[in-house]
Length: 352
Image (tube, rainbow, N blue to C red; front, side, top):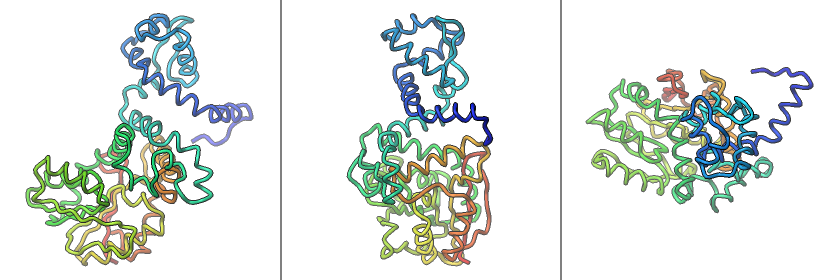
């Protein structure tokens, strides 16, 4: 990462930040109006007038977007009348990770992000009020408008789903009969476990609205006889995680909490675990990423947590999480880094 700029370079970077929200919306408009897709189909370029005609837009509107797109390195001018999609534009239009991130930022984060200063001062997700009247986004997640909910879920699932195949092999090395899935959300992991092993049982622990959605999904797949549902507010220290698990699984769950809350949750997990229980924490740690772009996205996700999600959580480094595990009276016994070449790392833990 380049950190030293000349005065001129620094001024350019400062202007990029100043206008970044406007350029972002220009690219969103190019996506929604079909500009990028039409450019993708015309790999050798297309006349601006033809672009406007095919999309039923004015040349004025198309020119405004294309000029912004050129300065954002999304499109390039072959001449005064012809434009072509750049590699950056191709990624925005065709790369799944980029699509998920764009939709999440635009639908979930964009309006509320203006409340970041207030959130820093109060320690509360002040931007959440742009979506609904809840203390945290998790309380109202299933009540969000369909498009916003879809963007949230696709963002959440994208960064874990590609790791599931390898994660299942890791968790089932010790042949668990009963797995507790804490923060199981829509039930994807529970169903993946049932598909992987015909003998395993899973207990999902989550807030009641999430469990209701998961139960419908699991019923549709025919796994109801092997999945149990345990409603719990994990932040309520009076609500204990039940005992009896061979393995306890937490996927992209602990990053939803402040560090002191993580210690409290892990202590609750510890009291439920026996000396033979394996505890798995899967997270995309900031300091354990193969690509700089992934770390960049994770740091941006921390701002979402501050402004929208709950006001006090963030994406953690692996060193920070290991310290919290120790503070809770657990120990990391094995680390599986960047499994399946994904963004995820699994910490296998046990009682100390």
